[in-house]
Length: 285
Picture 1 (cartoon, rainbow, N blue to C red):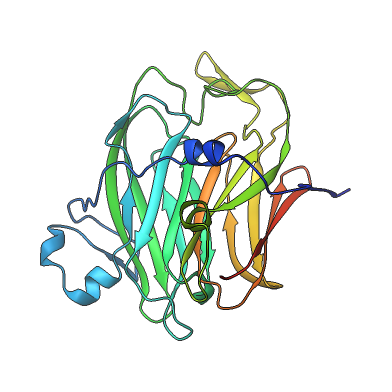
Picture 2: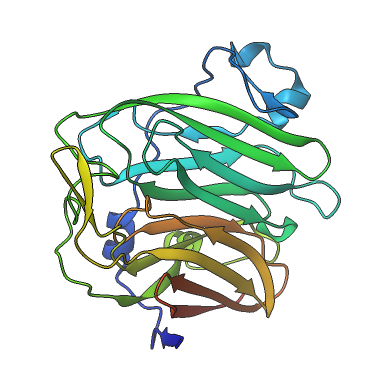
């Protein structure tokens, strides 16, 4: 039976939100050209040699070149692509084909986003990995690029012991909270301004399995977030599909371009049928 939990308030301290926000680490990286799925444009080589059209369709992935925290790798995807009613990015997908949980997330966007920007944290297997980020343009199809990262070999990433580093074994869950970064910084919003909504939620994301002598044993019931739906002024503006690779207690950021005052609403759903939601009222000044 579905359960719904709603945050009584989206209030959370400025320090709490700004402290949780992880700055993008590293910059643009386009690896050597390799085989890509049929119909997909893989951008590779020197970014400076791309045409303006290619640069517009280039999904830029920011990620650390090296990290010791395999349980919470910060990932940021952004693009210079327009987000208009007749030309926009429909989806962003992040994958690591060498990982036991290859899918890191699929982010479905609409023109109301105003800008392509998504930030989240994911588990990544220890060792060297090559992350692929693919963007789907409603006019020009699928475009992708790759970035290499390395995770300290001492960790367990997606496939190891639950819980991951930094999270207790409890199933403690708290409703999400929303904060608008520009409102925190400037104290006001303007009509048509692209803003960045930050969403923080207390929720474990675990597969309930453990590796023993090279074999995977199921030792507890899985508990993880499956999706986040976003509405503004009563209309859906984006939807994020998660996997078990999402980090515990994730902090997510996405762009939104409100052209009228209204209520921003996020609804999380987990694999056990629970729904957790929060709202934030946007007013212009």
